[in-house]
Length: 610
Image (tube, rainbow, N blue to C red; front, side, top):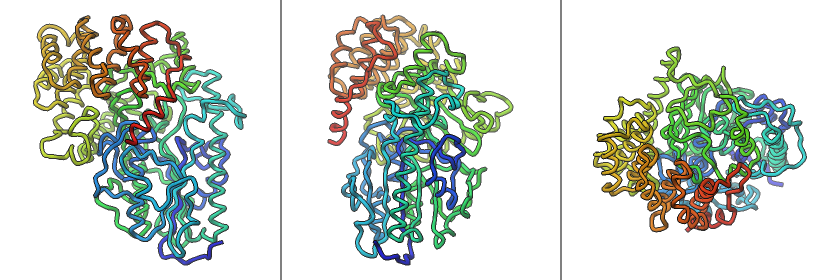
């Protein structure tokens, strides 16, 4: 047992539950068995509206490590990437080590960047523990709990909650598989609570309770359909509980306080630095949660989505204490694009089965249709976020305010998400070089895409002639989104000229898709197939496969052999996208078709490490 020490700075215990929404007793869930977290909440501060930086693990964990929004340092905003972190962008464990802390991580990393975990932590393994620290050293100990991961619902164990007792959200059909996904997950939440309880017991055994600030959160929201990967509360809402001992209680609101303001977990790294007695570095984009008065009227939490595994889809969102505003930059794509890994869960397969059988109401079927350009939800009156208030005059002021705040944030963090993956200008430093990435000009075009206003066609046509490839790309996407009426006459000829002459594949691909979909141009389909060929960089190939998938299966059928060749490749994203398309071409796809290849996932992990 360690001797109790009167430390001037607190020890810090940070527990992170994987993929875990706040379905806890202290958050009002009647089905939860979470006595240890409920006790932590009673002696600490509960942040009722805490949100992750992204609704999926790797981008959100980048933010949790660096305090930098993933879209600020491309390609960290894509799911499963390897962003370069500049040497000066110190992570919080490096900073705390410099302040004399013994820092441990047990054990997940998944930081979506080239940071070497062994270099930034004193110990990073399944055995890492504060008990190995040098005598007298304060510690920061991070423990990640993996059994709450999405894969927890891929199988079935004994239920601790009766599936019939579950309240299903309005956007989901009432099927046994969907009920079972929700009910089954509670046993994993209970296991996570017991895990936290064991760590708290170890603190007590070591005589460290009065010296340690305890923080609990998750990397992102839940795992049920339309949660993980999606920019609604279900995908972004996380638990955040901070409990400080009496000697450090002045740093936070009084015990038992519930903060209603929206906060982001991007604020966790500067909080850790602050607690350790350091000054958060300027590159950290959030403020410390310590010594803070939380104003629901001014606090905001921003979130994002870009490539999710094999699917490109650019989404940005902002949440205040009551409203969520979402801007969809690919409104021509349905929400429910097939995600090979997600479809390993019975809930997604069940939902799609009901859709194909025509048994869904309009609210439940919206997931399978094209998206609106803008969404606005009153999350107090509409917690399921199914009644879109965008365009409602009664909420015009709210919509205008949040739209302006979102754009200002995107400019402030220099959002890389409007660049093609792999672009030379991608990255924190590269994207900020003079003239490399005219983001304001790019957003002027990209923001117009979601309006789906035929009056914007001249803007998109002009953008096709812009010297910047990102501007041209979004001009082409804008024409594609406007549809058949926009792809006639002179505009059609401009698309053909761009398809023939533009040096950038990411400009040519949306031009080809528009021509293929709305002009029946078989040479444009052939151009997409050529872009998907093995001679091109994999992001180009993936973008082309997504475009081919958006066509009618018979349009892609002449290129079946090329698709089949890609389907056999040991690249997770390319293989999954091509296998799904191949089944669509052959007419053999059903929701029960397993597309995901576990071996390809392992290959992709190794490629990213290199």
